[in-house]
Image (cartoon, rainbow, N blue to C red):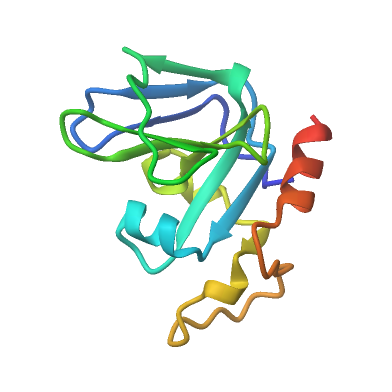
Amino acid sequence: MPSEAAFPITGRCYCGAVRLKFSARPQTVAYCHCSDCRRWTGGPVGAFAAFDEADLLAEPGLGPAFSSHPRVSRWTCKGCGSPLAAAFGYLPGQIYVPVGILDQADELAPDIHCHEGSRLPWLHFTDDLPRAEGSGSDALNSAGSKT
């Protein structure tokens, strides 16, 4: 369970055209080292807060999703291109939001490293968080079922 961040959790894209608000705290926060998330976020690792899909209010809405992989849907701002959210078929009922677009990012420390096997070899973390070689779906689904 992530730290007790200020509530409500809010966020926005870079240009401010899309605003996010969550009616509950995140179920978990995770680093993702997979190449797909690196390409989507543009960083050497992604960090995402997982929420129940029903807890998200997006104004004016997320718009159409796109996908380059089966069972993965991603949303970006049509104005500035900021990553907004992602959903994964193997993590039903959850929506993953990049921590960097959340106003409470400084209070949402990750709980786990996912796709550790894909971590860039020059990127080193000294934390003692659990590390999943693959998607970490067991731990992430478990976090979703605890809420």
